[in-house]
Length: 69
Image (tube, rainbow, N blue to C red; front, side):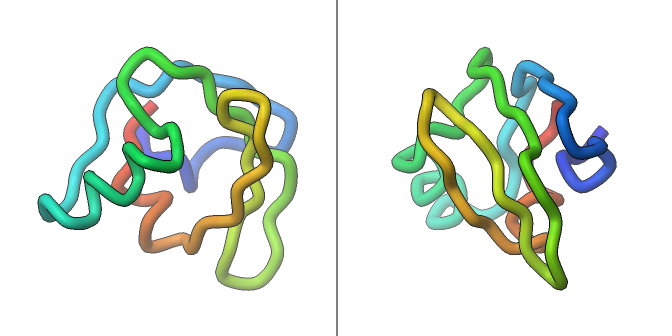
C-alpha cells in the first residue's frame, strides 16, 4: 500500500520506491530505500511529516504515493 494510506504513529518497512528516475533518486537521498522503516508522524494539508532513519522529513502527498510499504 502507498505511504499515504498509513495512519499517524504506524511504522512500516519500505518495500519499493516508484516514480520517475529523478523522483526515485531524490527520495533515496532522503533515506527512502527498500528495507528502511518509515513512520508517519503527522499529516497536514497536502504534506506528511515522517520519521526515516532518525530524521524528520516533510514530503508531499504526491511523493508519498510513490513510496510503497
